[in-house]
Length: 475
Image (cartoon, rainbow, N blue to C red; front, side, top):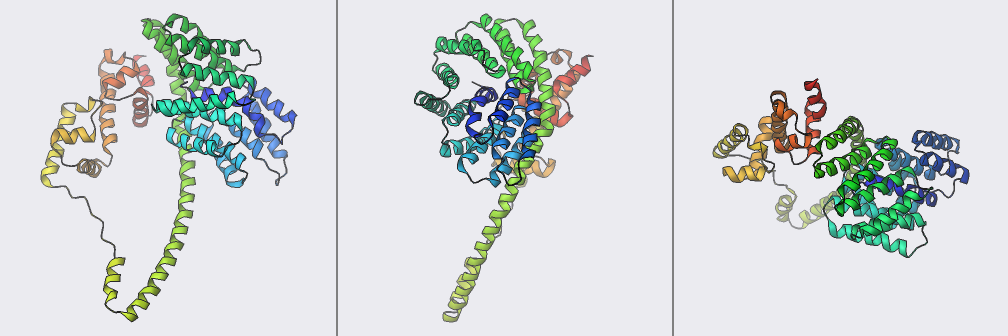
């Protein structure tokens, strides 16, 4: 339920035919064959070759849609997003726009920008007329809401997906997959396992769907407190996931085994899978450091274009209003000179207020920051602007932020995270026992709320993962 990308992979084949009706069955069959064999590079080359064969004026949106899906599977999010946005800018057909909005939502879900993802999936739900795509969208929305700890919307989304499959003639395998999710969500674990075993036994099932089925059986067994039995299914899940060569999926699969073996008290086994997990982190971090940055640049450029268009419209509207006001002012001035002063006052804007921090407040802030460093209060996970201000009698959080920004040229969160990262870095170098802690424990000891945020901050400051840094020290 937690791995959004696996849900997407599983339902990929069962919705693909609904959106490429104008392409030949031969092309479709070949693409499906490549995907079923996890030959994504071959699928991409084949689709691009067929795109080049199409005349310039011919609609290429169906093949572009498939290309975006394959790029998504390869985690080539930047290229996928560019093609999706370019397609949105050129097509007017509502259902085709729905398909690309769905893909953009899937990309944002993969990089954990859940609010952005939900925004695009809501557009799909609003305008979509394709039952297969609606089911898939509701499944993904359910997972997104679960990640946001919004159980009400998560439940509503899974119920909507289940309703659609009950009242439609969708593919039986798709119905089976939705039923798995529905029964897992409603704690019907025995029925959920039965449905997943059907998927595994089905010779037509693809690698990703079988992998996901093994994962769900393991999840059901964990919920039933059969941890040792769950390890066998999580192992099968990991073995199939490794074939996809996707570091994000491998990381999720390895983490399931780490958690189970830690709960069983078998730390030796957990550490063995931790090596696989750390390798996947290294792969995904080195990828995201470059690709994710490009991805957000694409979105920023798009927002900039939209902002310019919006500014132009607002400028024209302002000009019209200004001309009307001038004409009205002249007319009114000729009729009543006294109103000229009032009109001038109305059109005069008050100057912006600058933040002024008194000497006494600055003194409090300096004492608070000194104490924060010397007493290492930054190691408390709940050290926030609010708590620092409350504990030191600082009148406003804005004063604290303004002071740090002026003196250190950084925000409060960056300031405190830098202190935590420097603490972790120095202690890893000096403390051999601390160096042997798991990365998650080091993160918690250093004041971070999660391992992921610690890894991100460490890479940003020292250009390498904490795991690699520790490995270099120990060798």
